[in-house]
Image: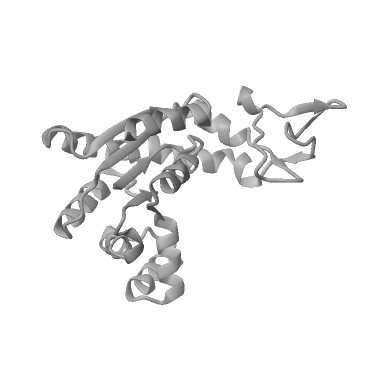
Length: 230
């Protein structure tokens, strides 16, 4: 199966994407990784992309989409893929849709994790890292994984280790900027999702649209996702 996944930063999109990848043995394709691989590999598209990036400009779609298309045609994507991080606006959604059609590649599912902006922001800013194991989940805004208290300080709920926060998780300006792009209903990522919803209605449910409530815990969201994917 071929899947597009959408969700704001803080929604658990990466976590759910990893679950789908493992469950269905498909390839998780991230747009940022594609850029880095092309630039590092010195491909023609990578060289062109680097010129824009070095100038601080956005890489145009006529470079980005061929990169993505080339990646999706590789052998490890023959059993299916999950594309994460693209498209980010309705123009990109349309261009990607047309490029995939031209290549004879269909999108089977569009997964949208729905979460309000305030909750998304709190989840990012509330993340805490355990000094003993970064995989121990701790978040001051999520009751199910709230850090423990010891001597008046918050400590890891799993092992009691010392907690810290990543500097980028506390960069409110950067978080707001990313969310400005995502939640823009006219020109942002939500508008890109709406493009595929419109296509689905016109084509009698293809691709299938799976809307997930991102507010419950990770396991609950995973359960809903697995049920809808069948």
